[in-house]
Image (cartoon, rainbow, N blue to C red; front, side, top):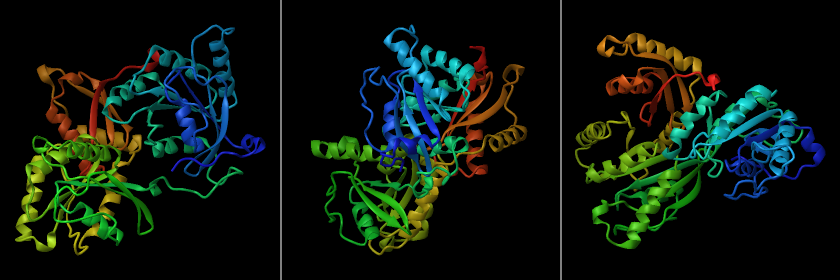
Length: 463
Protein backbone atom coordinates (compact mmCIF):
# COMPACT_ATOMS: atom_id res chain seq x y z
CA UNK A 1 0.00 0.00 0.00
CA UNK A 2 1.19 3.46 -0.78
CA UNK A 3 1.82 5.93 1.96
CA UNK A 4 3.67 6.36 5.17
CA UNK A 5 3.37 8.70 8.10
CA UNK A 6 4.72 12.10 7.22
CA UNK A 7 6.61 14.03 9.78
CA UNK A 8 10.28 13.96 8.79
CA UNK A 9 12.24 17.07 9.49
CA UNK A 10 12.64 19.77 6.93
CA UNK A 11 16.27 18.81 6.60
CA UNK A 12 15.33 15.18 6.00
CA UNK A 13 12.87 16.17 3.28
CA UNK A 14 15.39 18.36 1.51
CA UNK A 15 17.82 15.47 1.11
CA UNK A 16 15.35 13.37 -0.87
CA UNK A 17 14.35 13.42 -4.51
CA UNK A 18 11.48 15.83 -5.13
CA UNK A 19 8.27 14.86 -6.94
CA UNK A 20 6.03 17.77 -7.98
CA UNK A 21 2.35 17.31 -8.91
CA UNK A 22 1.07 19.70 -11.59
CA UNK A 23 -2.21 20.13 -13.46
CA UNK A 24 -5.15 22.42 -13.97
CA UNK A 25 -7.57 22.96 -11.05
CA UNK A 26 -9.70 20.09 -9.75
CA UNK A 27 -7.97 17.17 -11.48
CA UNK A 28 -7.13 15.49 -8.15
CA UNK A 29 -3.64 16.78 -7.30
CA UNK A 30 -4.36 17.12 -3.57
CA UNK A 31 -6.04 13.71 -3.46
CA UNK A 32 -2.92 12.14 -4.96
CA UNK A 33 -0.73 14.12 -2.55
CA UNK A 34 -2.73 12.75 0.40
CA UNK A 35 -2.45 9.23 -1.03
CA UNK A 36 1.34 9.46 -1.33
CA UNK A 37 1.99 10.96 2.11
CA UNK A 38 -0.33 8.43 3.70
CA UNK A 39 -2.96 10.60 5.36
CA UNK A 40 -5.32 13.49 4.70
CA UNK A 41 -3.02 16.52 4.83
CA UNK A 42 -4.17 18.59 1.85
CA UNK A 43 -7.70 19.97 1.80
CA UNK A 44 -9.80 18.35 -0.94
CA UNK A 45 -12.95 19.89 -2.41
CA UNK A 46 -14.82 19.81 -5.71
CA UNK A 47 -14.37 23.54 -6.14
CA UNK A 48 -11.31 24.62 -8.15
CA UNK A 49 -8.60 26.73 -6.55
CA UNK A 50 -8.67 25.23 -3.04
CA UNK A 51 -4.88 24.74 -3.06
CA UNK A 52 -3.02 28.03 -3.35
CA UNK A 53 0.44 27.50 -1.84
CA UNK A 54 2.95 24.75 -2.43
CA UNK A 55 2.63 22.02 0.17
CA UNK A 56 5.42 19.51 0.83
CA UNK A 57 5.36 16.18 2.61
CA UNK A 58 7.33 12.97 2.92
CA UNK A 59 5.92 10.55 0.38
CA UNK A 60 6.32 6.86 -0.28
CA UNK A 61 5.19 4.60 -3.08
CA UNK A 62 6.06 1.02 -2.25
CA UNK A 63 9.87 1.21 -1.75
CA UNK A 64 10.38 4.63 -3.34
CA UNK A 65 10.85 7.53 -0.91
CA UNK A 66 10.69 11.18 -1.97
CA UNK A 67 9.50 14.67 -1.11
CA UNK A 68 6.12 15.21 -2.75
CA UNK A 69 4.96 18.73 -3.62
CA UNK A 70 1.31 19.68 -4.10
CA UNK A 71 0.82 22.80 -6.23
CA UNK A 72 -1.94 25.23 -7.15
CA UNK A 73 -3.86 24.51 -10.34
CA UNK A 74 -2.13 25.73 -13.48
CA UNK A 75 -4.18 28.55 -14.97
CA UNK A 76 -3.62 31.15 -17.67
CA UNK A 77 -3.69 34.48 -15.86
CA UNK A 78 -1.93 37.79 -15.47
CA UNK A 79 1.20 37.57 -13.33
CA UNK A 80 -0.13 40.23 -10.93
CA UNK A 81 -3.36 38.36 -10.23
CA UNK A 82 -3.80 35.76 -7.49
CA UNK A 83 -4.09 33.03 -10.13
CA UNK A 84 -0.94 34.30 -11.82
CA UNK A 85 1.00 34.18 -8.58
CA UNK A 86 -0.31 30.66 -7.96
CA UNK A 87 1.00 29.62 -11.39
CA UNK A 88 4.37 31.18 -10.55
CA UNK A 89 4.49 29.02 -7.43
CA UNK A 90 3.87 25.95 -9.60
CA UNK A 91 6.62 26.98 -12.03
CA UNK A 92 9.05 27.45 -9.12
CA UNK A 93 8.19 24.01 -7.80
CA UNK A 94 8.87 22.50 -11.24
CA UNK A 95 12.27 24.19 -11.41
CA UNK A 96 13.26 22.57 -8.11
CA UNK A 97 11.88 19.09 -8.92
CA UNK A 98 13.54 15.78 -9.76
CA UNK A 99 10.48 14.54 -11.67
CA UNK A 100 7.03 15.98 -12.41
CA UNK A 101 3.59 14.38 -12.58
CA UNK A 102 1.22 16.18 -14.95
CA UNK A 103 -2.35 15.23 -13.98
CA UNK A 104 -5.36 15.33 -16.26
CA UNK A 105 -8.93 14.28 -15.50
CA UNK A 106 -9.71 11.14 -17.54
CA UNK A 107 -13.45 11.45 -16.88
CA UNK A 108 -13.69 15.09 -17.97
CA UNK A 109 -11.48 14.51 -20.99
CA UNK A 110 -8.66 16.67 -22.32
CA UNK A 111 -9.35 20.41 -22.23
CA UNK A 112 -7.72 23.31 -24.03
CA UNK A 113 -6.05 24.17 -20.72
CA UNK A 114 -4.49 20.70 -20.59
CA UNK A 115 -3.16 21.14 -24.13
CA UNK A 116 -1.76 24.58 -23.34
CA UNK A 117 0.14 23.37 -20.30
CA UNK A 118 1.30 20.20 -22.05
CA UNK A 119 2.95 22.44 -24.67
CA UNK A 120 4.44 24.57 -21.88
CA UNK A 121 5.86 21.46 -20.16
CA UNK A 122 7.31 20.09 -23.40
CA UNK A 123 9.12 23.40 -23.96
CA UNK A 124 10.06 24.43 -20.41
CA UNK A 125 10.46 21.32 -18.27
CA UNK A 126 14.08 20.34 -17.62
CA UNK A 127 13.07 17.22 -15.68
CA UNK A 128 11.19 14.05 -16.69
CA UNK A 129 7.43 14.63 -16.97
CA UNK A 130 5.06 11.68 -16.42
CA UNK A 131 1.54 12.09 -17.73
CA UNK A 132 -1.08 10.76 -15.29
CA UNK A 133 -4.74 10.27 -16.26
CA UNK A 134 -6.47 10.52 -12.89
CA UNK A 135 -10.05 9.48 -12.06
CA UNK A 136 -9.57 6.54 -14.44
CA UNK A 137 -11.71 4.04 -12.54
CA UNK A 138 -14.46 2.45 -14.66
CA UNK A 139 -15.18 2.57 -18.38
CA UNK A 140 -16.41 6.19 -18.29
CA UNK A 141 -12.76 7.25 -18.27
CA UNK A 142 -11.68 5.29 -21.36
CA UNK A 143 -12.30 8.09 -23.88
CA UNK A 144 -10.34 10.65 -21.85
CA UNK A 145 -7.50 8.17 -21.38
CA UNK A 146 -7.20 7.74 -25.13
CA UNK A 147 -7.34 11.51 -25.71
CA UNK A 148 -4.41 11.95 -23.33
CA UNK A 149 -2.05 10.32 -25.85
CA UNK A 150 -2.45 13.41 -28.05
CA UNK A 151 -0.69 15.62 -25.46
CA UNK A 152 2.70 14.44 -26.67
CA UNK A 153 3.96 13.42 -23.23
CA UNK A 154 4.06 9.68 -23.82
CA UNK A 155 1.74 6.98 -22.51
CA UNK A 156 -0.50 8.19 -19.69
CA UNK A 157 -0.49 6.30 -16.41
CA UNK A 158 -4.12 5.39 -15.63
CA UNK A 159 -4.75 6.14 -11.96
CA UNK A 160 -7.49 6.62 -9.41
CA UNK A 161 -5.99 8.61 -6.55
CA UNK A 162 -9.32 8.43 -4.72
CA UNK A 163 -9.52 4.61 -4.79
CA UNK A 164 -5.80 3.78 -4.90
CA UNK A 165 -6.00 2.04 -8.28
CA UNK A 166 -3.05 2.11 -10.68
CA UNK A 167 -0.36 2.71 -8.04
CA UNK A 168 1.77 -0.19 -9.33
CA UNK A 169 1.77 1.42 -12.79
CA UNK A 170 2.74 4.78 -11.26
CA UNK A 171 5.56 3.04 -9.39
CA UNK A 172 6.85 1.53 -12.66
CA UNK A 173 6.79 4.95 -14.34
CA UNK A 174 8.55 6.73 -11.46
CA UNK A 175 11.18 4.12 -10.58
CA UNK A 176 13.61 4.97 -13.45
CA UNK A 177 13.66 8.65 -12.41
CA UNK A 178 14.04 8.38 -8.63
CA UNK A 179 16.88 7.06 -6.45
CA UNK A 180 16.87 3.28 -6.13
CA UNK A 181 15.42 1.67 -3.00
CA UNK A 182 17.63 2.32 0.00
CA UNK A 183 19.32 5.38 -1.53
CA UNK A 184 17.12 7.84 0.37
CA UNK A 185 18.23 8.56 3.93
CA UNK A 186 14.74 8.21 5.32
CA UNK A 187 13.47 4.95 3.91
CA UNK A 188 11.52 2.03 5.28
CA UNK A 189 11.40 -1.64 4.46
CA UNK A 190 11.02 -2.34 0.76
CA UNK A 191 7.65 -3.42 -0.56
CA UNK A 192 6.89 -5.28 -3.78
CA UNK A 193 3.87 -3.92 -5.70
CA UNK A 194 2.75 -7.53 -6.23
CA UNK A 195 2.77 -7.98 -2.45
CA UNK A 196 -0.30 -5.77 -2.03
CA UNK A 197 -3.30 -7.72 -0.70
CA UNK A 198 -5.17 -9.69 -3.35
CA UNK A 199 -8.75 -8.39 -3.51
CA UNK A 200 -10.65 -11.65 -4.06
CA UNK A 201 -14.46 -11.61 -4.29
CA UNK A 202 -16.65 -14.73 -4.23
CA UNK A 203 -19.92 -14.39 -6.16
CA UNK A 204 -22.66 -16.69 -7.36
CA UNK A 205 -26.30 -17.67 -7.06
CA UNK A 206 -27.85 -18.14 -3.60
CA UNK A 207 -26.76 -21.26 -1.71
CA UNK A 208 -23.80 -22.02 -3.95
CA UNK A 209 -21.61 -22.27 -0.83
CA UNK A 210 -19.79 -18.92 -0.88
CA UNK A 211 -19.72 -18.38 2.89
CA UNK A 212 -18.87 -22.03 3.53
CA UNK A 213 -15.91 -21.74 1.16
CA UNK A 214 -14.57 -18.65 2.94
CA UNK A 215 -15.01 -20.30 6.35
CA UNK A 216 -13.02 -23.29 5.10
CA UNK A 217 -10.20 -21.03 3.87
CA UNK A 218 -10.13 -19.18 7.19
CA UNK A 219 -10.31 -22.35 9.25
CA UNK A 220 -13.13 -20.97 11.43
CA UNK A 221 -16.87 -20.33 11.32
CA UNK A 222 -16.37 -16.64 10.58
CA UNK A 223 -19.49 -16.30 8.42
CA UNK A 224 -23.02 -17.50 9.12
CA UNK A 225 -24.02 -20.44 6.93
CA UNK A 226 -27.00 -22.74 6.58
CA UNK A 227 -29.28 -24.48 4.08
CA UNK A 228 -31.45 -21.38 3.68
CA UNK A 229 -30.72 -19.25 0.64
CA UNK A 230 -29.94 -15.56 1.16
CA UNK A 231 -28.31 -15.65 4.61
CA UNK A 232 -25.53 -13.29 3.50
CA UNK A 233 -26.73 -9.73 2.85
CA UNK A 234 -23.75 -7.40 3.11
CA UNK A 235 -20.52 -7.77 1.18
CA UNK A 236 -18.09 -8.78 3.94
CA UNK A 237 -14.34 -8.09 3.51
CA UNK A 238 -12.05 -10.30 5.64
CA UNK A 239 -8.22 -9.96 5.82
CA UNK A 240 -6.44 -13.29 5.45
CA UNK A 241 -3.02 -14.67 4.55
CA UNK A 242 -2.25 -17.50 2.12
CA UNK A 243 1.27 -18.92 2.10
CA UNK A 244 2.55 -15.67 3.56
CA UNK A 245 0.77 -13.47 0.99
CA UNK A 246 -2.01 -11.09 2.10
CA UNK A 247 -5.54 -11.56 0.77
CA UNK A 248 -8.78 -9.68 1.32
CA UNK A 249 -11.62 -12.22 0.96
CA UNK A 250 -14.95 -10.67 -0.01
CA UNK A 251 -18.13 -12.65 0.60
CA UNK A 252 -21.22 -11.44 -1.26
CA UNK A 253 -24.94 -12.02 -1.29
CA UNK A 254 -26.35 -14.59 -3.70
CA UNK A 255 -27.52 -13.05 -6.98
CA UNK A 256 -30.81 -14.24 -8.41
CA UNK A 257 -32.24 -13.14 -11.73
CA UNK A 258 -33.39 -9.51 -11.39
CA UNK A 259 -36.97 -10.34 -12.36
CA UNK A 260 -37.24 -12.58 -9.27
CA UNK A 261 -35.89 -9.98 -6.84
CA UNK A 262 -38.86 -8.24 -5.27
CA UNK A 263 -37.76 -7.65 -1.67
CA UNK A 264 -36.07 -4.27 -1.20
CA UNK A 265 -33.49 -5.70 1.21
CA UNK A 266 -32.50 -8.41 -1.26
CA UNK A 267 -32.27 -5.82 -4.01
CA UNK A 268 -29.90 -3.72 -1.88
CA UNK A 269 -27.84 -6.83 -1.05
CA UNK A 270 -27.44 -7.63 -4.76
CA UNK A 271 -26.38 -4.03 -5.46
CA UNK A 272 -23.81 -4.34 -2.66
CA UNK A 273 -22.49 -7.54 -4.27
CA UNK A 274 -22.15 -5.76 -7.60
CA UNK A 275 -20.20 -2.93 -5.97
CA UNK A 276 -17.90 -5.52 -4.40
CA UNK A 277 -17.09 -6.75 -7.91
CA UNK A 278 -16.19 -3.20 -8.93
CA UNK A 279 -13.49 -3.03 -6.23
CA UNK A 280 -12.20 -6.60 -6.59
CA UNK A 281 -9.17 -7.62 -8.62
CA UNK A 282 -10.10 -11.28 -9.12
CA UNK A 283 -13.64 -12.66 -8.90
CA UNK A 284 -14.50 -16.32 -8.29
CA UNK A 285 -17.87 -17.34 -9.71
CA UNK A 286 -18.95 -20.26 -7.54
CA UNK A 287 -21.26 -22.82 -9.13
CA UNK A 288 -23.26 -25.53 -7.42
CA UNK A 289 -22.01 -28.74 -9.08
CA UNK A 290 -25.27 -30.50 -8.24
CA UNK A 291 -27.12 -27.98 -10.44
CA UNK A 292 -24.52 -27.30 -13.13
CA UNK A 293 -24.25 -24.07 -15.11
CA UNK A 294 -27.40 -21.98 -15.40
CA UNK A 295 -28.27 -18.87 -17.39
CA UNK A 296 -27.96 -16.68 -14.28
CA UNK A 297 -24.37 -17.86 -13.81
CA UNK A 298 -23.52 -16.64 -17.30
CA UNK A 299 -25.18 -13.28 -16.60
CA UNK A 300 -23.06 -12.86 -13.46
CA UNK A 301 -19.89 -13.88 -15.32
CA UNK A 302 -20.67 -11.51 -18.17
CA UNK A 303 -21.01 -8.58 -15.78
CA UNK A 304 -17.70 -9.42 -14.07
CA UNK A 305 -15.92 -9.45 -17.43
CA UNK A 306 -17.69 -6.27 -18.58
CA UNK A 307 -16.24 -4.55 -15.49
CA UNK A 308 -12.81 -5.71 -16.60
CA UNK A 309 -12.13 -8.01 -13.66
CA UNK A 310 -10.16 -11.26 -13.82
CA UNK A 311 -12.59 -14.20 -13.53
CA UNK A 312 -12.26 -17.74 -12.22
CA UNK A 313 -15.11 -20.27 -12.26
CA UNK A 314 -15.23 -22.91 -9.51
CA UNK A 315 -17.52 -25.95 -9.40
CA UNK A 316 -18.34 -26.34 -5.71
CA UNK A 317 -19.77 -29.43 -3.95
CA UNK A 318 -17.54 -31.57 -6.14
CA UNK A 319 -17.47 -34.26 -3.46
CA UNK A 320 -21.16 -35.04 -4.09
CA UNK A 321 -21.30 -34.38 -7.85
CA UNK A 322 -22.32 -37.24 -10.11
CA UNK A 323 -20.69 -38.18 -13.43
CA UNK A 324 -17.88 -35.72 -12.73
CA UNK A 325 -16.00 -35.98 -16.04
CA UNK A 326 -19.10 -35.36 -18.13
CA UNK A 327 -20.17 -32.50 -15.85
CA UNK A 328 -16.79 -30.77 -16.00
CA UNK A 329 -16.50 -31.03 -19.79
CA UNK A 330 -20.11 -29.87 -20.23
CA UNK A 331 -19.58 -26.78 -18.08
CA UNK A 332 -16.30 -26.02 -19.88
CA UNK A 333 -18.02 -26.18 -23.28
CA UNK A 334 -20.91 -24.01 -22.08
CA UNK A 335 -18.49 -21.37 -20.74
CA UNK A 336 -16.58 -21.25 -24.02
CA UNK A 337 -19.83 -20.73 -25.90
CA UNK A 338 -21.51 -18.37 -23.42
CA UNK A 339 -18.45 -16.20 -22.71
CA UNK A 340 -17.25 -15.75 -26.26
CA UNK A 341 -15.64 -12.39 -25.43
CA UNK A 342 -13.05 -14.06 -23.17
CA UNK A 343 -11.73 -17.47 -24.10
CA UNK A 344 -10.00 -19.74 -21.62
CA UNK A 345 -11.55 -18.60 -18.33
CA UNK A 346 -10.05 -21.00 -15.73
CA UNK A 347 -12.46 -23.68 -14.46
CA UNK A 348 -11.65 -25.53 -11.24
CA UNK A 349 -13.38 -28.24 -9.21
CA UNK A 350 -13.54 -27.59 -5.45
CA UNK A 351 -15.33 -28.65 -2.32
CA UNK A 352 -15.88 -26.04 0.36
CA UNK A 353 -16.99 -28.82 2.74
CA UNK A 354 -13.85 -30.95 2.46
CA UNK A 355 -11.33 -28.30 1.32
CA UNK A 356 -10.55 -30.10 -1.96
CA UNK A 357 -9.01 -27.82 -4.57
CA UNK A 358 -9.09 -24.64 -2.48
CA UNK A 359 -5.31 -24.13 -2.40
CA UNK A 360 -5.22 -24.49 -6.18
CA UNK A 361 -8.06 -21.99 -6.45
CA UNK A 362 -6.22 -19.29 -4.49
CA UNK A 363 -2.98 -19.90 -6.40
CA UNK A 364 -4.94 -19.54 -9.65
CA UNK A 365 -6.32 -16.23 -8.34
CA UNK A 366 -2.82 -14.87 -7.72
CA UNK A 367 -1.77 -16.02 -11.19
CA UNK A 368 -4.82 -14.35 -12.77
CA UNK A 369 -4.03 -11.08 -10.99
CA UNK A 370 -0.45 -11.18 -12.26
CA UNK A 371 -1.64 -11.55 -15.88
CA UNK A 372 -4.41 -8.96 -15.35
CA UNK A 373 -1.80 -6.48 -14.05
CA UNK A 374 0.84 -7.26 -16.65
CA UNK A 375 2.48 -4.49 -18.67
CA UNK A 376 4.17 -5.67 -21.86
CA UNK A 377 7.28 -3.71 -22.94
CA UNK A 378 6.52 -1.58 -26.00
CA UNK A 379 9.34 -3.10 -28.06
CA UNK A 380 8.18 -6.66 -27.38
CA UNK A 381 4.57 -5.68 -28.06
CA UNK A 382 5.40 -4.20 -31.45
CA UNK A 383 7.57 -7.17 -32.44
CA UNK A 384 4.54 -9.36 -31.76
CA UNK A 385 2.32 -6.89 -33.66
CA UNK A 386 4.52 -6.93 -36.77
CA UNK A 387 4.63 -10.72 -36.74
CA UNK A 388 0.85 -11.01 -36.31
CA UNK A 389 0.24 -8.66 -39.25
CA UNK A 390 2.80 -10.46 -41.43
CA UNK A 391 1.17 -13.79 -40.62
CA UNK A 392 -2.35 -12.55 -41.41
CA UNK A 393 -2.38 -9.16 -43.19
CA UNK A 394 -5.46 -6.96 -42.81
CA UNK A 395 -7.89 -6.96 -45.74
CA UNK A 396 -7.96 -4.27 -48.43
CA UNK A 397 -11.63 -3.28 -48.92
CA UNK A 398 -12.18 -1.79 -52.36
CA UNK A 399 -8.55 -2.43 -53.21
CA UNK A 400 -7.32 0.17 -50.67
CA UNK A 401 -4.94 -1.03 -47.99
CA UNK A 402 -5.64 -0.62 -44.29
CA UNK A 403 -2.36 0.35 -42.63
CA UNK A 404 -1.73 -0.79 -39.05
CA UNK A 405 1.28 1.23 -37.89
CA UNK A 406 1.96 0.39 -34.27
CA UNK A 407 0.39 -0.70 -30.98
CA UNK A 408 0.81 0.56 -27.42
CA UNK A 409 -0.50 -0.60 -24.07
CA UNK A 410 -2.63 2.18 -22.59
CA UNK A 411 -3.23 0.62 -19.20
CA UNK A 412 -3.29 -2.55 -17.13
CA UNK A 413 -5.98 -4.06 -14.90
CA UNK A 414 -7.37 -5.08 -17.41
CA UNK A 415 -4.75 -4.96 -20.19
CA UNK A 416 -5.89 -2.28 -22.65
CA UNK A 417 -4.20 -1.68 -26.00
CA UNK A 418 -4.45 0.98 -28.70
CA UNK A 419 -3.71 0.28 -32.36
CA UNK A 420 -2.76 3.29 -34.48
CA UNK A 421 -3.09 3.32 -38.24
CA UNK A 422 -5.06 4.63 -41.22
CA UNK A 423 -8.50 3.66 -42.56
CA UNK A 424 -9.18 1.84 -39.31
CA UNK A 425 -12.91 2.51 -39.61
CA UNK A 426 -12.90 -0.08 -42.43
CA UNK A 427 -11.14 -2.77 -40.38
CA UNK A 428 -13.54 -5.74 -39.93
CA UNK A 429 -14.48 -6.80 -36.41
CA UNK A 430 -13.23 -10.27 -37.29
CA UNK A 431 -9.71 -8.88 -37.67
CA UNK A 432 -9.96 -7.12 -34.31
CA UNK A 433 -10.94 -10.47 -32.77
CA UNK A 434 -7.95 -12.06 -34.49
CA UNK A 435 -5.61 -9.52 -32.86
CA UNK A 436 -7.19 -9.92 -29.41
CA UNK A 437 -7.05 -13.73 -29.58
CA UNK A 438 -3.44 -13.61 -30.75
CA UNK A 439 -2.59 -11.26 -27.87
CA UNK A 440 -4.05 -13.74 -25.41
CA UNK A 441 -2.45 -16.80 -26.96
CA UNK A 442 1.03 -15.43 -27.58
CA UNK A 443 1.58 -12.89 -24.76
CA UNK A 444 0.24 -14.91 -21.81
CA UNK A 445 -3.03 -13.02 -21.40
CA UNK A 446 -5.34 -16.02 -21.63
CA UNK A 447 -8.58 -16.10 -19.66
CA UNK A 448 -8.69 -12.40 -18.75
CA UNK A 449 -10.46 -9.42 -20.34
CA UNK A 450 -8.38 -7.71 -23.02
CA UNK A 451 -9.52 -4.42 -24.54
CA UNK A 452 -8.44 -3.15 -27.93
CA UNK A 453 -9.15 0.32 -29.33
CA UNK A 454 -8.43 1.60 -32.84
CA UNK A 455 -7.23 5.17 -33.37
CA UNK A 456 -6.10 7.10 -36.40
CA UNK A 457 -2.50 8.14 -35.91
CA UNK A 458 -1.71 11.84 -35.72
CA UNK A 459 1.33 13.82 -34.67
CA UNK A 460 0.67 15.40 -31.25
CA UNK A 461 3.40 18.00 -31.87
CA UNK A 462 1.37 19.60 -34.67
CA UNK A 463 -0.79 21.28 -31.96
